[in-house]
Image (cartoon, rainbow, N blue to C red; front, top):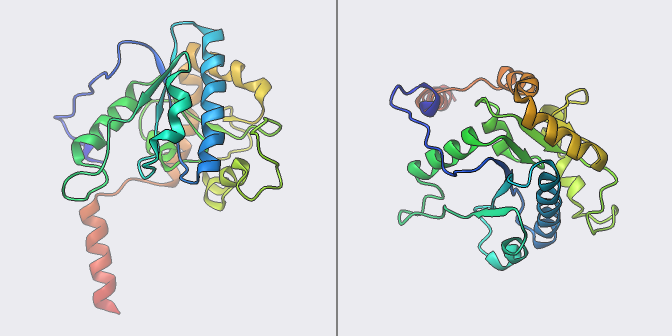
Length: 221
């Protein structure tokens, strides 16, 4: 809320190239492996659209096993964003890191995710938000496995808020992937109705107002 409403907010463009921002959202190594496979598929698809396009991947902040992401470093078209971590105070993300993250979201061609809360954050900015729900994609794991990524994508809150059946922002199969990534590159405004719909469902509130409501509730108990 402060980022959006502060008159002092100046968006810093973090990269000197056009990029899509892919947000890792899982901790379990088998799920991370599936997300890295998707990242490589995305990078290859973007190169088909424009060889100068990059995929910036944001690693999952709680995952400290950086070796799980080693395969990304050697993948053409991928830039690893690991510019964050716990502060000395133990806070997972300092305010300047949060601002940097929002700048990267704001400056991206689009944000891509598999059901991350960052997808909700991105909806408040004029950056198209794309959700991957690619049935039939070879994740490298049996669909019956409890850690198949599709089970993560189809969590209750994602199905309720993010997986709009009629939205072009939800990519439902591999055949639609390149077409959608190309369309959002050429006509980003066509994908902003999804952002507006999400914002309407979850209006932003100041953290002090939320804290005051909690205190009022506790007093009334």
